[in-house]
Structure formats: structure tokens, C-alpha cells
Length: 342
Image 1 (spheres, one colour):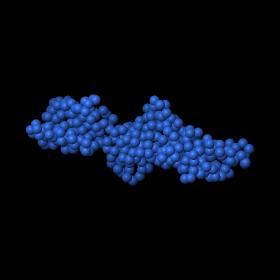
Image 2 (cartoon, rainbow, N blue to C red):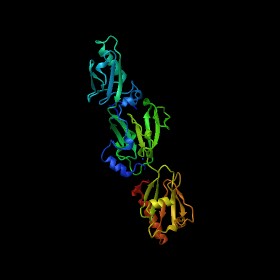
Image 3 (tube, rainbow, N blue to C red):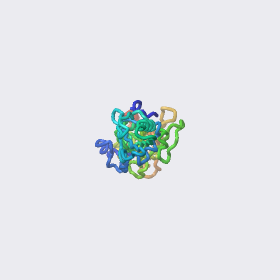
Image 4 (cartoon, rainbow, N blue to C red):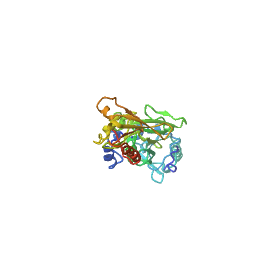
């Protein structure tokens, strides 16, 4: 992915946390996972991360400059490229930096210094990114490309996209151009095209700050994707029908789903429950009889539900009424609320 600014313009996130955080600030400065040591980006290895001949400087980028023999003019100073792409440097003067690579800017600076020094030696380092075009896609509230300024973590990038939707999965996937090197995560792999590094993180690890190292710094051009969670549904005579998202586990049991649905209604025919399960490669579903009454009395073993299963608990009554209830319940799934599991 080219980084020329002209061409680039999870349900472990607890909903209460997101509401509190995201409606106040996209920066999340007080979040445990947002606490990053306030060191200059260059100190964390930014200059070694960037490809000096591939990264294109642009407005807002900050650099440091070292010139041998006149280093005092540049010592302990950083210089920011203005909105027009211009840069003002001691001795060198005004210079066009926007659109230049770091290597090219060094060469141009050397040329400008030849009237002062016989053999000017110039070293330029990137201190901070002025903006980072980052794609945040999938089950977030505001997917799209975000221009992030300064040092931003994975948590902050997700927050900038409005946080996670209720149907977000339990992992986030990061794709990074190999020009920045491999993503610093244990499971990072190179994709088949050999152009990108790909890795994933459990959102629980980010939010719980159980391993702060996974809350990595985001770099320009990163693509962050939050897949939609697998769901199981419960409909019919329960107090809270809806879809319930699976976390890192592959299934929920029938009793767990009934609990998440806040129990059965008094009129539920719990001995005539059914699981409606998708048939691979078909739009049909197979029916599996389930006697919840025996299960709840401990007479039968609990049953594990699979992704996309529908647990239907009918009302007691005539078969015709029961079947109509089933049809109505299934038809209502499209507009049904999706609930997280914590």
C-alpha cells in the first residue's frame, strides 16, 4: 500500500465501557490499555520502522536533524512540516519536504549546505507521524479510513471508529505492509502475497490489560478488521429472546442460553423445545428435539449449541398454535436484538 497522502486520504468490549469512553473522547487517555509511556516516537524505534526511501513525508510529520560540524544549531530540536508541506530549518532555510522521502530530504539538505560546509553530513530521523491513514473495518460503529495523529495504540484506533457493535467478535485482525516489518505479535505471519504481515489479538487481552504488549502501536496504512461474532438464537417462550454472541468458546449450552434469555415464561412447553440447526450447503434446517424440563431437572445432560443454532421453546397449546408461533418467531430473527456475553 502506498502511503502518499494524496492517494490515501470485538464481546469483550463491554458496552458500558464503550459508551463511557467513546462519547467523551476518542483518545481514551485514562484507559489502562491507553497508557503508553510518553516518549518520542523515535525513541520507540520509529526511524528504524520506516523505510527511509519509501515513506513519504507530509504535513504534520515531525523530524529531527543532525548536521555534523554545526550540530548545535539543531540540538534538542524537532521540526514540523507545515500544512503546505514546507519546512524551515536553521542554516538550510525553507525547503519543500512534503512528498519527499527521508532519504531525498537528506540529499536536498546536503545540497543546500554545500555553500557552508565542504562535505556536509546530514542525518534526518522521523520523530512523529503527522497523520496515519488507518482502515478500521467490520463490526465497528463507524467503519472507514481514519487519519490518526501522533502515537496511537490499537485500542485508540478502535475507539476512533466509534467502538464495537454488539455483534462484534472476540478478536481483531491487523494487516500491515511489510515495509514496516512484521507486526510485533506472537502469531504474526506473512500473507501469501508476501506483501503484508497479518496478526490477530483477543480483545479481552486489550481491554483487560492482561498483556499490555498486545496493545501495539498503529502505523500508517494498517488495516484493522473486527469480524462479526458467531451467534446462537433463542426464540419463543423466554423472557428475553434474541441472539447471543459466542466469545472465544465455540459453543454455548442450552442451559446457558436459557439463562442469558432470563429464563422461561410460565407458559413455556419446556418438554417440547427444539433446536433448529443449519444444514451445510443448504438453506434448510434440521430439527433436534430437546426436553428442557428433564435437562433442567438434571435428568438429561446439557446440550451444546453450535453457531447459528436456533433454540425454540413453544407455548403450551395446540400443535397448530405451536407451529404458527415457530414460524412467527423465526421470521422475527432479522430484527432481533443481539446480546453480548460477559
